[in-house]
Image (cartoon, rainbow, N blue to C red; front, side, top):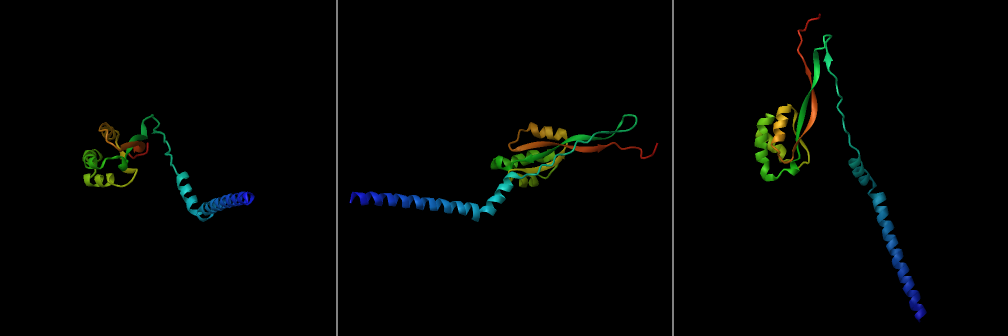
Length: 158
């Protein structure tokens, strides 16, 4: 009788282990087969990003060494709206509007977006970007860029 109990115990434990193995195999099949397409799209979004690197252009000089065209440093001003406290958004928009030459209501709309990144203005002059940095506003930053500047000529051929 004790031998039958021992056998029964072993059979129950083997059955439980087999059932657990069957559940694990079922879950693996679910994730690897049924959810494959969804998980592949999520992974692609996380791992594939496109970064465009701007080309650096040189200056164009005339035969006398005078510049005809050159790159001028400018800045793109951006916000991280999720890092700006809700109570400070209107004040930040009021302080940024005159420096960016934009409508305060439009800026407040941009700062109120549920985004992690939003461009506020592109190609802002250096002095305006420096004044924005001096304000030390939460969630506001700048990114350097360049603008091509051409010196007007007389239009005639020499």
